[in-house]
Every structure is written in C-alpha cells, then in structure tokens.
Amino acid sequence: MKEYVEKRSMKTPTIIMAVLLLLLLSTGETRGQKYKPNWRSLSQWEVPQWFDDAVLGVYCHWGVYSVPGYRFNSGAEQVDSGLWYGWFMYVPNDSEDDNYGVYDHHINTYGDPAEFGYHDLVPMFKAEKWDPDQWVALYKYAGADFAGIAAEHADGFAMWDTEFDEFNAMDKGPRRDILGEMFEATRKANLKTVVSFHEVPEEMFDPARDYCPEGVGANDPKLANLYQKPPFSIQNKKLLEVVDKYRPDQIWFEDEYCGEKNWKPFIAYYYNAAEEWGTEVFISQKHEMAPLSCSIFDVEGGIFPDGRWEWAGMEEPQKQRWQKDVPIGNFWAYAEGVGCRPVNMLVDGIVDRISKNGVTLLDVAPKADGTLPEAQIQGLRELGDWMQINKEALYGAKPAPFVEGGIDEWQAGSLRFTEKDGFLYAIELGNQWPPSVGFADYEESEAPSAPYVIPGVEPVPGSEIKVLGVEKALPWRQEGMNLVIEELPDPLPGDHAWSFKIRVLSESQ
Image (cartoon, rainbow, N blue to C red; front, side, top):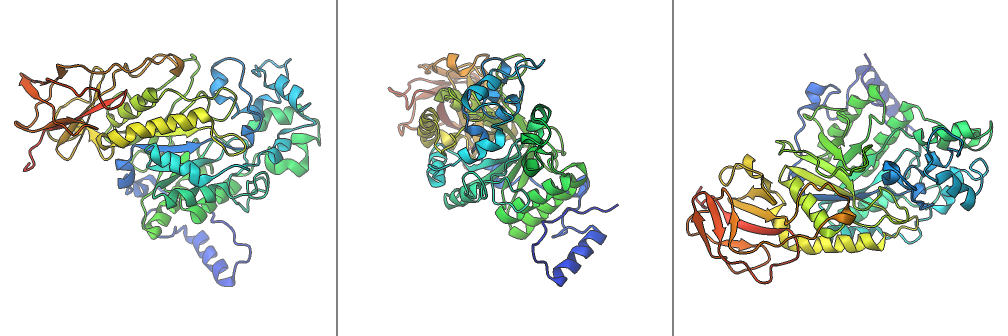
C-alpha cells in the first residue's frame, strides 16, 4: 500500500527534485525517518516540555465571517454567532430549519443572498487596523505561553499566503499573510505558536448550493474555489504548506482535515519535520482521531444542546497534559454583544484546569478591521494583573497527587492544589467551580479570612508560608492533619484566587 503524504508541489521543479519525489512515492519514505505513518511508530512522540509547563494559550476565530457582526437571535446556537453566518444566511424563513434571524438580517442589510453572496463579504474583510505585535503584547501580559489563529474554518477562506486556494487572505480581503505576520510577532515575543483547522472546508455552504440558482453565487463555476468542497489531496497540500512555510508548534484539528488516507502520513511528516528543525511539536484533536500516545486531547467549551455552558473539561487529574479551548466571550467569533466573562471566572477556570493537568486555550473574537473588542482587551489586562502575581503557582506545576510529598488531593472545596520544586501551592478560588451559570451570573470571589484552614497539608516544620504577592511570612500552626494559618495580610493581594506557597519537602529531599 502506498504510504505517502503529498508534499506541496513546486512551481518549477528540477529534474533532481522530480526524481526524488518519484522515489518517495515508490518507497513510502517520510523525511527524517524517525516516524512512520502507523500508530506504533508515531507513539515514539512525547509531550513537548514547553507544553508540559504551559498554562495558557490565546488564539482567535477571525475571517470573512467577522464582517456582518450579527448576533443569532436565540437558542444554543448563539455561541456560533458570526462564525456560521455563511450557513444561516442561505436558510430562508420557510425552511424547516431555524435560521436564528440571520436570513432576514442579510436581506435587510445586504440584499438577497443569491445576489449578494458570501463571496461579496470577502472584500469587506480588510483588517486595516490590525497590529499583530499589539495583540501579542497583550496576550503575553495576560500570561500566554503560546498564541496563534484559526487558519481556516468551515468557510474555507485561508488566512495564509497559499498557492492552493485563490480565496486566501494574501490575495483577497486583507491582502496580508495573516498567519505569517501573526507567527512572526509571536516568535519575536518568545512565545510558542498554534494554528487550528476547523470542520470540513466549504461544509458551510451546503445551504448556499441549494438556495442559489444554477450558475449563480454558490453555483457559479467561477466561484467554485470558495463554495465547492475541495478534494482531500488539496487540503493535504495546504497542510503540508503550512508545516513547511510556518513551522507551527501546535496544530489543532477539529477533524481529519486532510482525509483518513492522508491522516497518519501527515502526522509522520509533521513530526519528522520537527525533528529536522530541532523543535518539539504536537497535534491536538477533540474527536479521538489519534491515540493520546501521539497527540494531545482537546476539550471544547461552549453551549451544548441543553443550553448550558460547559466549562470544566476533565473531571479528574489526567496523567498526560490536555487542553481546553473556550471562548473568552459569548461567542467564538465577533458579533454584537460578544463581551468578555469576568476576570475571576477566567482565573478560576485556568487554575482548576492546571490542578487537573490541563492547559487553557482562550479564543478571542476580533472585529473585521483587526481590533479586539474593548471588553476583551480589558479582560486580558485584568487577567494579566493576576498572572503577574500568581503564575508562579501554575507554570511548570503539576497536580499535587502526581508529585512526591504534599497532599494526595487536587482539590478541597474551593481550594485547588498544584506542586513543584518541593512547594505545594494551595489556591483559594473563593467560588464554586465548575459553575452552573453563564458568566453574567458568576459571583464575586469570597476572600479567605483567618484563622484559615487548609485540610490535609503538613508543611516542613519551621518553614515559611507566604501568600504570593506579599513578602511577609504568615504565622501558622499544625492541628492534626490540617494546616491553620493564623493571620492573613490585610489587604490580600488582588480580588480573586489567592495562592498560598507552602514547603512540603525539605530542600535535602
């Protein structure tokens, strides 16, 4: 069986390159040779150290779908406001399916979708105010360890300079290499990079192909590159192009974007490429498309069919690092009212996930002009204020049960425990997590008061205990298996999630 990932075609291949390509096709060899396209070989992969230490990533859903800015009028689908505009704009009111008011909005704003189609929104996506360095500076202050963008969603518009799709950000719309500029800014800030691929490209336009007359809009052969589903061979070439051209540290997948036949060969190609680069990389995936022996499991957060938010991720600590991606606001992509959840809710989720060995990937929702909503800018700044004091308790830390000494628990009520370098960090959320409410109803954090009891913790005798952000040691005593802190700083540093640093292993251990 031929096992080969189609490498991106060269515009002017030399005879030598052509011969080498034929050899690759006939032997199924992948460059680097450490990884072969089978699960046993791919399982040589190990979780990158940088990700094992990481706390937070920030990326965005941004594209042509950011132009209308329309908020779906009801239902659990509101979380997809903006993002799936291209689907619902072609669902008329007499359809059996709900269109959440999108069809009427499009008619009233732009006209009949058959006459003003999704492709007509492309020139309106200009990114004229976008400053990637400004974005990255904000992300880094907020505590991010890696950053990036969604490279392609279900509309199939590519956010990079690609030779395999004429509907891309370099040739249309912004006329900028969005992915390239974002990665350049990210690496200048010494952060790792992430890029994501969502759904099956052009899946969004199933209703469009039904709605538009023959030869019009979504059924116009001249627009087939946008509206029609591409073969997996093209999607595979696009993936390989991103690997070769941009060298991402993480690639996030919704599905087997390049098709089942190409999936394992692609992973092998990517991992072998990283061996040549001398970097640590991984794929993350949410539908069990690859074993955890060669991938990171991602848990998506959002509103599900019962209309309730899903915040928590994994219920218990996992031995292998995992990831939770969740929007910072109401929706994945920009729409009116996208907002930002309160900072204590952001913090509580991040802390809870680290206590279970999970990394948070926050999604922001830029406007079509490249600016972030003011509420999200403010939210990230407030998150950064907290991180400047408390990230020590999270970065490079592990769930306490997985580390020698300390405590064999990851939580106690509103407390969460992490551990590193002989210290236990007891982080008081001051709130119930996971919440059963949306962020509009999330309560303010309740500050601890003395005497403050941390159950099941025995510090090294005579050692100092501090709350991060305050230099003065706290008086404490041991009562059986419980640690009692007799006095607390007044005022406490910050308004949420206070971190107590406790030595539980002597320096000689």
